[in-house]
Length: 57
Image 1 (cartoon, rainbow, N blue to C red):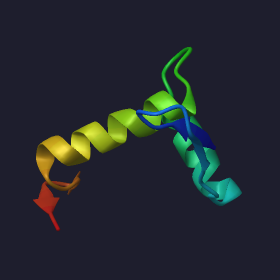
Image 2: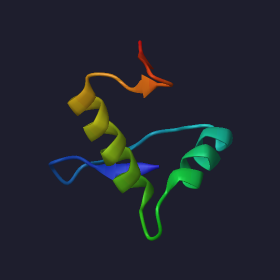
Image 3: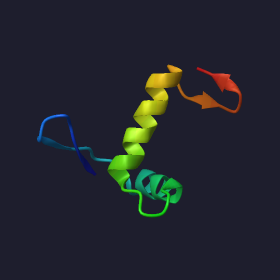
Image 4: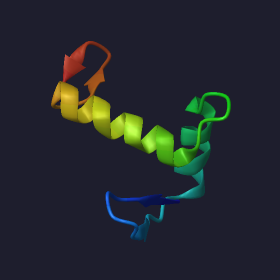
């Protein structure tokens, strides 16, 4: 998986096949993996942490 930072540099993040498949199950129609990761980061930055089943770590 690769994504572009504010500059035009591209970085590669290696993830397991299992994690990739899990993430792909959450993609909306026509959503790229980059867009999905950007959304995850935005939620994390907004919330301060991810909430899991009503509790925050």
